[in-house]
Every structure is written in C-alpha cells, then in structure tokens.
View 1 (cartoon, helix red, strand yellow):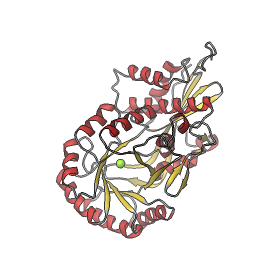
View 2 (tube, rainbow, N blue to C red):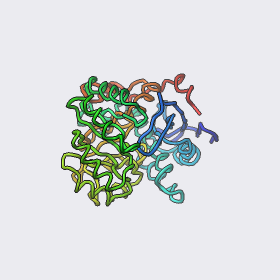
View 3 (tube, rainbow, N blue to C red):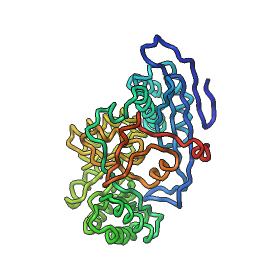
View 4 (cartoon, helix red, strand yellow):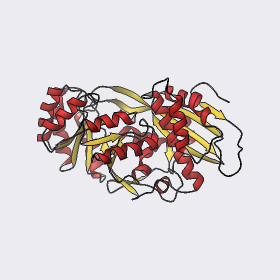
Length: 379
Ligand SMILES: [Mg+2]
C-alpha cells in the first residue's frame, strides 16, 4: 500500500525463509517546526525548518532516519523508493542503497533524490543495529564513545546582544569552539565578529559566509577575520567555485582554514573538492551525501587526501557514525537542529566537556520519537 500525501506509507506482509528479517513497512513523515525567531545567513532566510523522518520496520523493530529537507524529499522516499525495499533483507543496508541509487538514474542524483536516499539509508542502518540489539556506534566499530562538537548559530538575523549571548552560553557550557554566520551585510560583518570575539574570550571562533562573498571580497574579509582570531572560514565563496576556494586557501592568512562540502550529494563532488585542493577541512552531511553509507565514503576519500572531516548539522544523525570515524574533527551542534531534536526525540547524546556522548545502553541510534509532541508539527 502506498499512501499519497505528506505521510507516505508502504506496507507488506513479512515473510521469508526465517534466516533474516524482512523489511515489512516504511513510513516517511514530514514535520515543519517554526524557528524560535527569524533566522538568516549570508544567502538565505527562514522561519521554519522541515524534518523528514523515515521509519523502517522489521521484526518488531523500527529504524529511524533523519533528514532536514523539503516535503518533496518525503514524497520521493515514501512513494518511489520505499516500495523497492519492502520484503528485502533488513540486515543489508548496502544492498538497498544500491537499489535506490539505480532507481533515481533518470531523476538526477544530487538534491532531492540524494536526500531521500540518505534519509532511508540512515533508517536502514539504525534498523540493523536495533535488530542486532547493539548501539549503532558498535555496529560501525566505534573507536570512542563521544565526538567533540562546535556550537553553531550566530545568525545574521540576531542583534549583537543575542549573538554574544548565544556564543558565550556555549562556551560557558564547556564547548570551546563556536561558529557564527556572516555575509548578509559585509560592512557590518567585521564589527559583529569583533563583538563575538570579545564575548567568548579565548574560545575558537569560526565564521560561515554560505557563499555570500566574491573572491576579492572574501580575501579581504579573511584578513579582517584573522585579525579577530577567526580560525575557520566556511564557504567564503560559492562552494561550486572550486578554483575560488583554492585561491582563498592559498592566499588567506595561514591560521584560517577554508572549509566547504555541506552541499555534497555525490562522491564525485567530494572528489573534485579534494582534487582541487579546495578545502582544509571537508564538511559532509549524512542527510544529503547518501546517508551514513555515503558519509563513510566521504571519510575515506578525505583520509586519502589527508583532509580532516567535520559533519554538518543534524547532530543526532551523525553522533554514532562519528564515534567510528578516525578522521573526524567534530560535529556541528547547530542551534536550529539541536532545538528540534530536543523537542521531538528522547535518547539524544549527552553534551559533556565539549563533546556529545553516545548512550551505549540503548540499541541503534538510541532515539525515541516523542510521538505526541511530533504530531503537532506534522504536515
Ligand atoms: Mg555552512
């Protein structure tokens, strides 16, 4: 059965030879959660965030996969991809990933198709760990139980007082590195960054322009930001401008790292970024890059180029994989998503000493949907 609309459900009879549980049902739901105030960065403004949540069911267990995407992603995942997985081996995420990738050939892989595959891939890995009765980080071969984070927000829509308070609160909570948005008003950016620096003392300060500057502007801003002790300059120019990123990396002060990668949907994009020498730190988002399967691929590519990895947004979706990735530097503890995940889920990782700690006592990713709370936001 396939239902149309925002909640897409696929159902089938369980069966099989008993050797391996079969995927019995898949629901893909969409929730739109208003922000706690206007939010903007250098190139986008928003008042709400849309969460796509896949539930993949087998043998009485439910795997949860998160995506921050558009409702169209849920429709594609629920209507077109989910039917391909029903009745398949619930312990074989890689098999289903291959099936899904083949199926979107004519749609084009980047964008909505990659996000739909990512959300289901994330759920399939969680389901497998839950069926085996082990934490997801154990399934992946964890090398630690926690991953350092950086506080991320500092939206360009914030006045200076809110900017200073948010960043300082993270530092006071034990997070020694924070990120703010720049690029909305280049004339005001340096003053905002100076204010942030004064508010956080010696903590590391990152800025993210979301591709708002042109090359010359970005180079000028890099020098100004470096004077304020900024050590990370994310998307100083468009992340499609690989040559521009490379030029920034070559010419910006040596103490400031150039980073990008959050819009990577495809292994070829990450390879091109690395081959161009475009980034000091690779960023990747498991809700876009092909799910946790794709994230491990990006990690391997980055390791082969001696470039560290930092995951983008959706901390609850990245924590367990991060525990198994040797080359990971940190997770992005993004205000918008941290807030949503705390509103809709129990079983989140614990923030302690500047790191998110995975709960080893819970199977899978440990998340439990607070259904009554979530239902209020379902669209
Ligand atoms: Mg960014």
